[in-house]
Length: 292
Image (cartoon, rainbow, N blue to C red; front, side, top):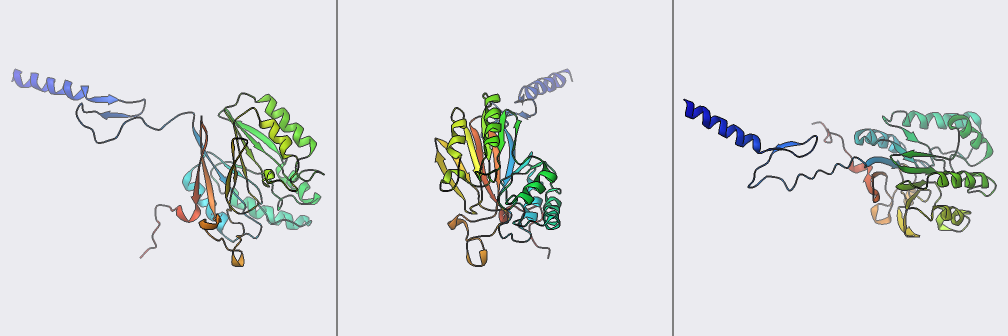
């Protein structure tokens, strides 16, 4: 009997010795021979975080697409969502009509379970009445915030007599950037992709403010996806989240033509943002099949 008791204690000690705490949360029994996993170096950097970007809803919006995006964002659970403008159809100077359009849009984003950051596009602010309505309902048309040592700059590319960025906005961001020189990354959100040149003014001046730091830029407006490298940094033009396509009857022409409805999923790392394009039609809940 004593022999059996001693044998049990030996087996227990050996078993406990094989149970490893691989981190503060993971505890698993590890064999010295073979184990049914590749490694236990979990991809769980506490400095990383995830957020989402939605692109143009309007400019000939297709009914139900943005509402679908809201439902799928609630499935994905980003920490927050950032827009790049064109949220309403706009281009009117009727107070009641603008309120109806903004009420419709706010009714959609108020269903999100996480914060939503507004950025204006040309469909949102295209005349003085619309600019005043934005101010009345949403406050400033350009702003910044700092989260987890990442600086977010939200621009108004419909601002002032210069049409794109007026002197007050330029000075605002000059002061913001000067006060936040040591952040690990800077993310810039705007509607019109000002770096394309032509009638877009002031962008080279704004780029000079960014020259001493790593940054990434996101815009929309064109309804066609594009990635480019400017000044050694990544510049993205996003496709749509409900806006009209370039094909017949304003339909989207598809991935081959860089036209699709998507949510942009960003994982922020020390090496910058890692971007994944999530097509709305490819995001399904836990009951994807029609009921029989």
